[in-house]
Amino acid sequence: METPRDGAGLVKEAVQCATRLKRARLVQLNTELQFLIREATAAGDAQTRRQLQQRLLEIHRQLHTIDSATHLQG
Image (cartoon, rainbow, N blue to C red; front, side):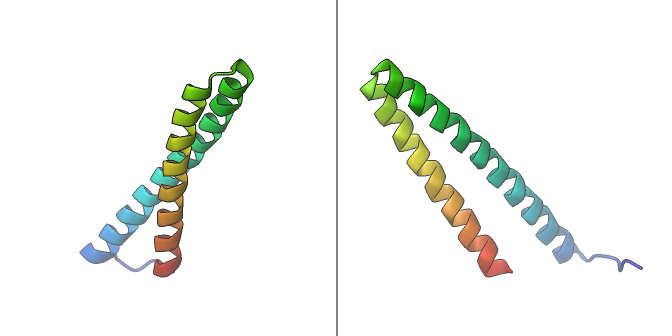
């Protein structure tokens, strides 16, 4: 039998859900950017490739932050 949740429990669940959604979106962006980087590389577009690589690096940082925080929360 499930016990009723208090306000703090509901907030924690909402935050965990939002974090999972954010992480899923970042993973999707990671995949898309890797594809675009390959396309820019094949086209010889070094400037676009560099810009995409910078965005990819930022996504990796965000994923690392989320994963670290999730690990600490247990």
